[in-house]
Image (cartoon, rainbow, N blue to C red):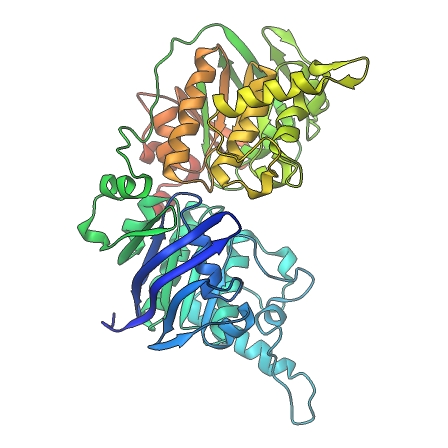
Amino acid sequence: MSDAPILHFEKLTKRFPGVLALDGVTFSIQKGEVHALVGENGAGKSTLIKIVTGVYQKTAGEIFFEGKPVNFSSPHEALKNGIAAIYQEFNLIPALTVAENIFMGHHFVTRRFFVDWNRMRKEAQELMRFLDVDIDVDQKVRDLGVAKKQVVEIAKALSHRARVLIMDEPTATLAQKEIERLFRIIKVLKSEGVTIVYISHRLEEIYEICDRVTVLRDGRHIATRDVRDVTMEDLIRMMVGREVVERFPRVSHTAGEEVLRVEGLTRRGVLENISFSLRKGEILGIAGMVGSGRTELLRAIYGVDPIDEGKIYIRGKEARIRSPLDAINHGIALLPEERKVHGLVLLLSVLDNLGLPILPLVSVRGFIQDGRLKAIAQDMVQHMNIKTPSLFQRVMYLSGGNQQKVVLGKWFARNCDIYLFDEPTRGIDVGAKVEIYHLMNRLLERGASIVMVSSELPEVLAMSDRILVMREGRVVGELSREEATKEAILRLALGRREEYASVG
């Protein structure tokens, strides 16, 4: 790692109407380092990155790239100059091949100005060899999994000779083995002098892969430190501006009677003979690798996907759930994995989103009682501590944590008995995570029960009373709170000791 900064921000400021998103931010990123950028949702991370890559224009301050002042007018200009960003939503064309995506916009041409397909394929293969991954460059991108699409994005950036690569939540949807492969790629890039700016809410990853970390809070630079010199507790304190007493505030409750029982649930090719029970006042965690069938299980229980065999019992009585409406009528709520796609209507207001599940309860002869709806929505905003300028703010403008609280709030207002949580804290900061955990505890205090799917093992271990482990569409084990460890879960989830050892 060189001592010379490849990027330097000097009093960088960005104002939006009514919002000071960045307030005089000054810090440097060294050449050839993996530099973490952390902070709560709304801290200014995304704004800073979008200014660097030319999506936004700064209000004041300076950006120096390799010692020279820059002010890119577009992402294309930033990319041409060696700065690339990889976001959670990939910028790929599904119908084109891997090679075509990598060289889109700067393909090779022959002397007769035809596309040089052979050279393009050869260069794409060289990039795959350099990254040490086995991807067919002639394969259509739509046929790739998330992890391989991410590799294609990295290869695309390298094809532009990128010297700074910005990764925004790169592990959010990856399985453990895929995360290990990504970290190996990052180490290869670092060894070749590429600078990585790494944005993640998973603080454990910062200590595993990063050299230094910069903390932003409320648009201000709080600190830049060597990772080895700062504890996780100090990092969290700097991010949230207060002491977080406990990252996983689990309150013990005595489980009551059985409220949900699933027997032999099967969806051919997806789920096979799944049986389990859920009791009142408990959290049943479901762990497993990506693709193990966790999300599909929740969707089947909720009536989103049809089942071929099996029965579902609610409080001892068989329930025929063929649609989400049937599930709602039985007191079941689903907080989906993709909140922006399946959990919210982004163009609608906080009021409209909170009101969707309770419209039948606030209507008389088909007419909505606006006053009653607003009163319930306002109560939910206060109850859930949703940070919004008003009930009429569009949900798309809220932070990830506040969006998730809106999803939870609409079902809280419906007063459901059984909550199916699919990745409840994905993509939200540590402070918002703690708030979500407190809300889960309050649900239990009200007598509700929770089934929670999560890829974050610390979350599963800390918040669950019991844990089911899934692999290839089957439940392969059940662990009590006392029996559950990271090693025990991974051993069941991976199925083979030698694979477990490689992940460890």
